[in-house]
Image (cartoon, rainbow, N blue to C red):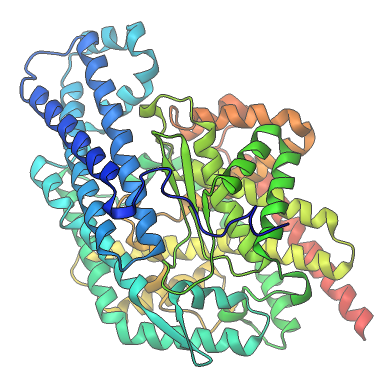
Amino acid sequence: MTQTKYKTVWNLDSIFKGGSTSPELHDHMKWTEAKIMELEEMVKEWTAVLDSDQLVDVLNRLRDIKMSVSQARSYAICLLSENPKDQGPQFYRGESTALQSKYDSINSDLKRKLAHTEESEWMSLLASEDLKEYRFTLQEWREEADREPSQEVSDLMADGYHAWGQFYQSFMSSIKVQVKGQDFSVGQAINLRSHHDASIRKESHEALVEKWTGLEGQFAQILNHLAGFRLNMYKSVGIEDVLHVPLAQNRMKEETLNAMFSVMERYKEPFAQYLNVKADMNGDAKMKSYHFWSPMNHHHQGMEYGEAAALVEEQFLAFGTEMGQFAETAFREGWVEAENRPGKSAVPICAAFPLTGESRVFLTFPGTFKGVLTLVHELGHAFHNHAMKSVNGMNKSYPMSLAETASTFAEMIILEAAMEKAETEEEKLFILDEKLKRSVMNFMNLHARFIFEKNFHEERKKGFVPASRLNELMEAALEEGYAGSLDEVPIHSWVWTPHFYKTESPFYNFPYTFGYLLALNLFVRAKEMGKGFEEQYMNLLRDSGRMSAEELVMKHLGEDITEEAFWEKGMALCVEDSEEFVRLAAYLHKEET
């Protein structure tokens, strides 16, 4: 495949031409601001109960503003991802955040008005045919009204709460790490965890530890300010349980989360055994944290970007026509930024552009199979956006748990194809290792993140938590999450894990595990149904923004996710992978001796 076909640098000019100096972007921001001002004037005149015609008008205006703000914000984020030092997109990110805050404020006013609507009038509104496609959103808003922050708090969020999250991203992007005498960005240094040379893995780990040790005080300040603002915001609306908001954001019942965690905690042993076997293969008594991502056999892991893109196109098409055409468009129209160069952001992203019905995927492609899986993970998010092109803008906001379902499902397509193509036992072991790394991340690492975040918030209620204590909390959480199977525990994970600093999505850990196990269930069905499953999958994705997680799975799969039996099905596949890995490792060891 030629490099011309698969460009490693994306095309953003088709969104707004000219980068942060784009006249189109400037005009777009002015138009959005004007529309918000118009709606703000309407809000001031709200006195009586809105009738269905008025409510439809308001909702349509909110929809247009929401999509417009999202278009601008995604563009600014993309520009900052490719060059975090560029001041232009930092300005527009700040402006779009301010516009989002104004939108949120109007939305909050509407929610409060809906909450005070008499039940008879409310039922009459919901019965209106004109409001049919907004019913789920309206019902959700009415229920959310009690936890909406006040106008004063909302006004403070742009330059307070969200600003700390944005500062974290800028700060992290400015950091350089030296390995083997060469400067690397944090993203590049972290990618060295999967390098075939053990000495490079260790040196990059030690260089990062040294960097975090020197900067832990600054990062502790950022994390404490974020959590402190969040807790005070919750307190102002009477929320005591820090899981209340993330569960609501993920449209998930607590019973569902408890059922999933119960299954996960029961099945630590098979994955601890996998880690112990792999550590033994490396000559270690326990799995050292910086060897976790090491490839089983580096001869099978190298892959050029063009080869990776061709593989993705081929396998997405094998799954279904729609997914195959989507992949072709994404690569040929320049939707992917994959170039491996210094100075880029450390965080892979997928940015949605709802007005143009496109997405952009950003990563630093390291030329490894792990990089291929990162690529398809983000493309899975993009395909989710693609599936929802025809959905009303107010129903495009799906929870993170379901976002991670689509991304994980895309990974499984590639992993399954790689396993089928494996010709030797060594290759099979390599693919099993890649699959099990994801199981360990979802069942151990993400569990540890959940434990840390929950314990940190409890301590933050009592006051500032210093870096030394954050290290202790992280160490204890990793020990529990990994069931004691990890050596040289990365106690600074709280520093370099960006999810802890996400202001929009607190507790962005259990949604990954939810998505992973749900994707496993979906993949089993896909294998049973073949290409006919694509339509069912697309329908599930389209509905992901207009019903709860429990309702969605019941409608499309006929399963009750508040029951442990559902989660056991996906877990069983992962346990089989672990058992097969242990068996193959023993067989190959016997062959060598």
